[in-house]
Image (cartoon, rainbow over all chains, first blue to last red):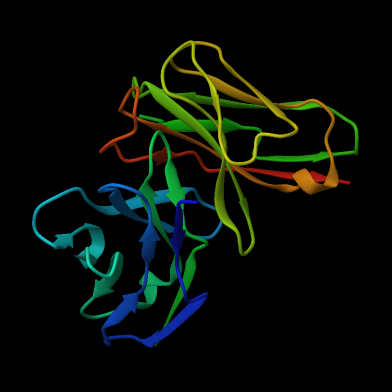
Length: 111
Length: 116
């Protein structure tokens, strides 16, 4: 079965430190990969996507993601975290006609 | 530009009651989706519509029906609600048609449903 895994339920970082939110996928072919963010009581918002090309993808709000085909990973990164980055983050893969989502990782940035 | 609009935002039902969640998008997107979000389970696809006039089952379709009324609207119906359907429901749309490819999803604000 195709799946997307986010191994950490929660990631805690201090403001100003770099952050990484991990994602691995098990999807056939060459899937398109996405990161979405969800703030409390809101819908999901698109952050960035990887289709092909450069393994480092830059997105909204200073986020970037690194694609690693051999490890089937697509980790979300940011060089310097902000308190306002605290939210729920979802990784997703295009596995056919609809996206497959991971279970989400709560990012908590402390001041 | 409203994007994706869902109604109602909150609803409490008794077991066995029926209701319909409405969704409309004003971005002229071909594809529309219904997901449910449950704690620790992420988003799971209920049904989707790749284009006007077509609908297909997703991962968790049991207990639900959908109607793609026109290109703008995609409704989700619970015929006989059960406590297991207590969840937050999200409608989404994307600008691709047919096989999903590079389009990003645009989400509504969600509908919080409680079944007692």
